[in-house]
Amino acid sequence: MPVKGWIEVDELYCKGCDLCVNACPKQVISLDLNRLTAKGYHPAFLSSEGCTGCAICAIVCPEAALTIYREVPARRAKANV
Ligand code: SF4
Ligand code: SF4
Image (tube, rainbow, N blue to C red; front, side, top):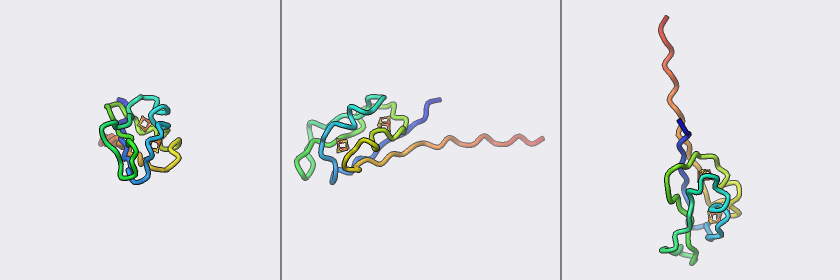
């Protein structure tokens, strides 16, 4: 089962530079062209499913505007023997 992840964009820092959009191997980030941040930029957002939580987008973001979350799979219960 693929790892499930998601991102949080801090719109106070996002400047709509598109770097994360181009770096995401799953192509699940877009710029929201219908909205502007308080500073006047189109903010990045998770536009579709399939994020793995790989954090590549956060690494390339020059503004450190992205926080990555990754689902931790439940541990398998140990069998009683
Ligand atoms: S790389 Fe960072 S600053 Fe650029 S669009 Fe993505 S979140 Fe915004
Ligand atoms: S964590 Fe990875 S898969 Fe998820 S949005 Fe960022 S680059 Fe894409």
